[in-house]
Amino acid sequence: MSFMEKTAWVMGGILIVAGALYFRMVIAASEALGATAPPIIPFVVSYVVIIIIASIVLMGIVGATSPDEADAPADERERRIIDRAGHWSGYVLGFGVLVGLYQFWVREDGNLLFHICFASLMLSQIAEYALQIWFYRRGI
Image 1 (cartoon, one colour):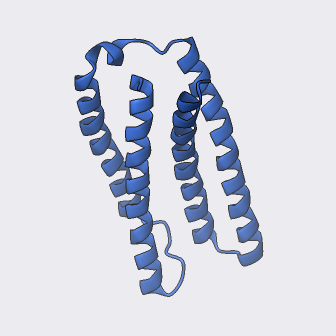
Image 2 (cartoon, one colour):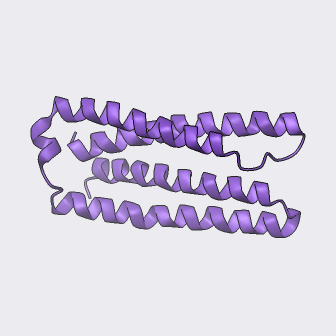
């Protein structure tokens, strides 16, 4: 397994865990309010802090286990995989934003629009890492 694939596994896992924690807090706040919770800055900050700390720790561990690979630049195949995964994950982001805009048009709930767009950002990044892993495994 290449270093870039290990990175994709680690970062994808971090984003899934952090996103699940974030939306667990949002759902709990929404249930307490009886409506969609507004964007709560401490929730967003905690999401970002979790990602930063987990990334530093886990990527430090991954880098320490294979220091030669960690310092090597991406080769031609890896650059192609990263570009292709980024391209396809953009569709996930675009689709999510369109869903959010549609629901805003129908329900006129700006809070839900924010959460759908934020989820789209999360899912597009997770999709990018998942696609990188898939492309590595597929041999592209």
